[in-house]
Length: 229
Image 1 (cartoon, one colour):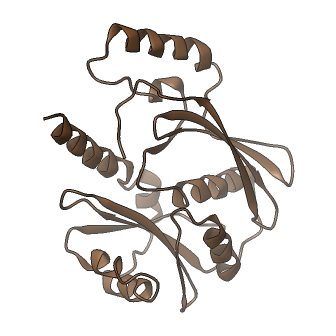
Image 2 (cartoon, helix red, strand yellow):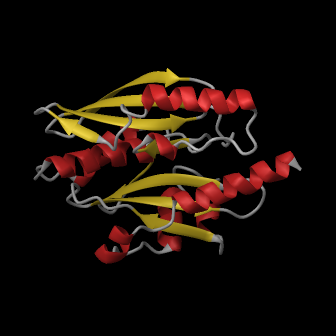
């Protein structure tokens, strides 16, 4: 029963995390044809190309106003017992790259797509957050948070787990905030995330040419939160 609950929770979290947001709907982004995307992926992954073609697969396009001629897509397949989610970048007619756990691939995509000059710190922040979201591992929990209450306590916690959660809230509630940017090139971007079952602060240095260097600091391990992959 516990295993079933975990599987259901994972599917729900993935479905929730990749629902199109209002900004995407307003932008009216043109989605790539499944077959066309599958053909682009096939030379770099025979195994993932068929997943793209499945009836139950959804494809969502990220907003990338910082690229001149490049796109990023999230491929979501929630069928079966093992949901599959991955990101892929395309540029021009012949460049395709899988982005999970591939920050160098993102920079290569940036180079192929062409980077527009950043017009505001808001756009730089969007660029950095897109980098983090698309080059993450999709086989484990990863979620950007904006406040402590975004950390969900495990269902039916023990008294010890409740006490641990309250202690963590006292310790971190005033520190956790939405993604922030400061300084000048290289700009400093700070993002708080839940990674696996740890609270992590990511600092990203973003240069004017789009290169990004990141460092991670684990603030707390073994959080009393639902275990997901």
